[in-house]
Length: 327
Image (tube, rainbow, N blue to C red; front, side, top):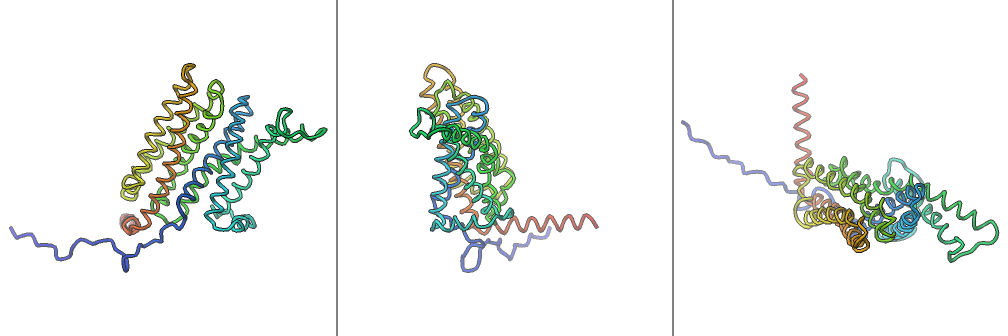
């Protein structure tokens, strides 16, 4: 038998010119941008929780949701302005509306949701026992406007909770763009967990039943979508499994599962307040971990040429195979 010839060409290494990455890494500064991702999801899901709770008669939970929505939107706006560098840049985003631009849509969503959240707390501020009393019919009118604004949060809340996934997936960063199918569901589940945490921390345990159910549903959605995402991405999903992003992603799974399990225990009369507090802290920690993990994985995938070159070559090869098979 002839001897096997030794390959004269060494295996290719994925390098770029002068050692520079193929893509520029995201220039968003940490922790402002991951914090904005977290706060936007919390504000949106809390607003939706407030709207549903108000319509179904869970008053304490509705109050917790609308204040969580307002504070989350305010803090998220501050984080975005800090990221942009100058406040007028955010105002410039509101000069036009481009449906094809996730940043433009998101800016308008944040402004609309923040305004509605501010109006939604009017029943708490101008109530007969509240800190502000308006003369004559102004008080009842303000409370009526607040109730209408709270109901409108059911429209802006889910959109605000998930649009940041479209914002990331609309970039060329491999770990974000390739995850465009599952990332909205990951963020939706994470946002639901954070809103449920607000409800369990702020509302009495006896009136936080819907928040506990929301915590379980959000944790399941987040865990299933995240697992499907990392499995489907293959090599591009490596940044979600390794390094600091991988550690944060594993921590988010543990915290989400622990928070959901503890939320079920919070429905029992004995130790309900302590269990609610533990579940709320765990769920908030898990939501923060998953946002920082996704952000960090994107930065890693943008700096390594393999995650750009290999998927492109595989797509070209699949197209060539389909063209050859159709002949």
